[in-house]
Image 1 (cartoon, rainbow, N blue to C red):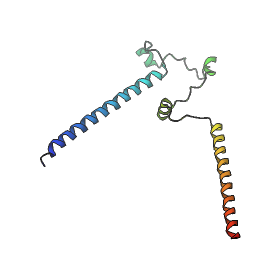
Image 2 (image 1 turned 45 degrees about the vertical axis):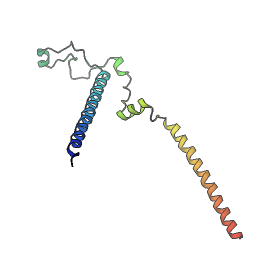
Image 3 (image 1 turned 120 degrees about the vertical axis):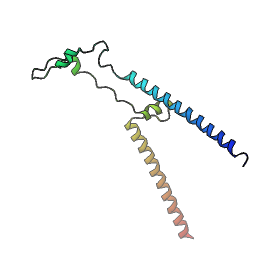
Image 4 (image 1 turned 180 degrees about the vertical axis):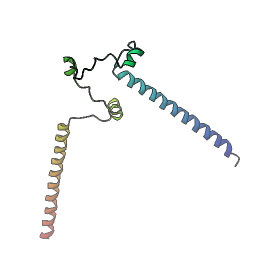
Length: 140
């Protein structure tokens, strides 16, 4: 076994390099994901508006004081549109590479009905062929 150890060392080195490269790629993808998510999150408050320690201790966070009744929201807040649904990772992946295209439910239903109608007509044709074969065998 004079070739054994050098091949083992070369294989281990290659494996280590491949694992390191894959780990690097995964880490970079994770960093890109975190940057993307942090850039799409809405900013709730400005960074220069930090509550003072005395206001925090008193419970005043810049909100209207509660007087035992509900606080009326401004008209703009009541009529605001709901946030659009967040796409999952797989939806974003498939959208990016155009692997699958999302179609509306009614279009998908009509497509399924067309397929069903095609299958039913083919089944009718096959049944007719089977009947013809049976008639031909009976006539012989």
